[in-house]
Amino acid sequence: MADYEAQVVVIAGGPSGLSAAVQAAEDGADVILIEKNAAVGGAANMGMGPLAIESHIQKRQMIDLTVEKAYRMIMEYTHYNIDGRLVKRYFEQSAETIEWLEDMGVEFEGAYRYFTKSEPTWHIVKTDQGIGPRAASFMNKALYARAQELGVKFLLETPGKKILKDEDGKVCGVLAVDKSGKEIEIACKAAIICTGGAGANPEFIKEQTGYIFGKDMFNFAIPGNVGDGIKMAWEAGADKLPVRIEQAANFEGIDDLPQSVPNVLMQPNLLVNLDGKRVMDEEQMQNTTFLSNAASHQKGRVLFSIVDTSIVKNYMRNGVDEISMVRFNPDVSDFVEGVKIAEETGNKGLFCADSLEELAEKTGINVDNLLETVDEYNDYCDGYDEEFFKRKKYLRPLTKAPYYAAAVRPGGYGTVGGIRINENCECCDSNFEPIPGLYAAGADACNIYDDSYMFLLPGNSMGFAVNTGRIAGMEAAEYVQDED
Ligand SMILES: Cc1cc2nc3c(=O)[nH]c(=O)nc-3n(C[C@H](O)[C@H](O)[C@H](O)COP(=O)(O)OP(=O)(O)OC[C@H]3O[C@@H](n4cnc5c(N)ncnc54)[C@H](O)[C@@H]3O)c2cc1C
Image (tube, rainbow, N blue to C red; front, top):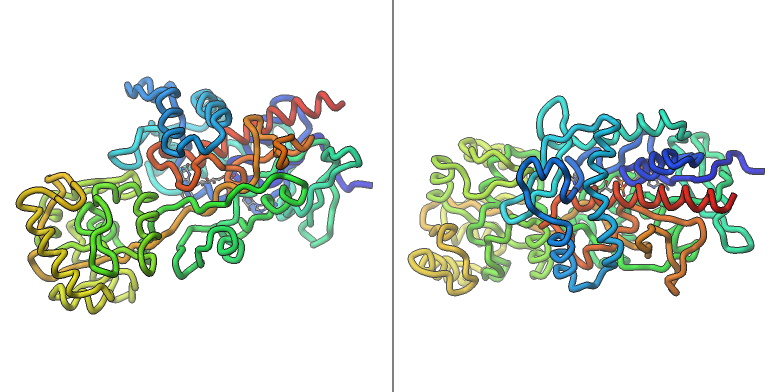
């Protein structure tokens, strides 16, 4: 005899789970949501907002990005190595999802780019304190309130453990552990897995991606996101797809420093590896996925961004060249104080030296090669970047001590992918056959970037979470009604 009964059980209450629960309940299903933590919202409580394309907000801002263009962009970016039907359904639904969220009280500041070369798809949630980290927690609050209004039952501090199937292979329940540590069974006809990937599981990350947490991978992670849903789906027969890191470059201790420090050191100036050699057109550094990927291909999986005092002074006078939505203040006048704070607090990612030789010694960069690279680079600044074709406006010579360097390493927002789903968010086995009653959404099933997060369309992972949550919710509600 089961402890609880519902038509649909949603496993986890991040944006994908909350969206799934609201949508399934709006479509008439009786829903229970179980969440491991004491609060809902998941990793998205730290973020700013989801992607949408052709939203009324973009139209008002005269942004002419179309679903067709965005679809072609992502398909070409991934070499068509992804499920085009799923991407199409997600992108096509994304504009209406903004209105769906607005109807439950979410407000948006507007549609933004993350960095200059990205598209303005990032719908940043309005808060009572302006634009900034954690804005999307306001969206999660609205989803939670709407779910409660619709009668969704929430069981917090209740991690899901196992999907139960009947003799016909159809989902018939979910095993979980309640607050008191007791195993409970929830009978249901459909389960939607939304547990947010495995960002906090170093062993799983090493096994799936080869990265070693804290050594060559520095990803964000909320405690609890350890791959439970991926493992539950695999155990229930879902096909295994690669689990990837949602890459975003890491500059150690960045959050503890005044914004001016990372802001200066993430400008498109000289970037070298441990051999003292350049590896890319530094203009692309603003795309933090590209930067993280580039770092992961180097010895020690590290790159060093280097500036001299004349570059710093120029930025202090005129503001930085490039801003991003995360570091959007071009004013870096407190850079020198910021460096002092970094030194006083023992920051391990920032280096300051009175000569390039000393900088090489402190960072471990090959000194002869560094001197040669700087020499050549300074020559390019008078003419043309023969090595990587960087545009003239970003070519600033390094001539004046002190020199500053930041170590840039691979990092990320957690993991994406693992569970094979189709465009209806049904979990599929290795024959591409849906497992009756089993759905997945959000990071656990986000297989749409191939090997690299697509930052050119920002808001993409939260957008995927909310939209696939909705798709899973509507499909599950229809399925359980057909089963009754
Ligand atoms: C700092 C930061 C900023 C970000 N900013 C953005 C942004 O602005 N835009 C964007 O597109 N993306 C952003 N992201 C990524 C985005 O937050 C994620 O893609 C999104 O939260 C994924 O949603 P989800 O529902 O799949 O998982 P999550 O939001 O991670 O939620 C997963 C939930 O599952 C619960 N859970 C885990 N295991 C179990 C279990 N066994 N049983 C029950 N519950 C379980 C967890 O407690 C958690 O509540 C950001 C990420 C970080 C870390």
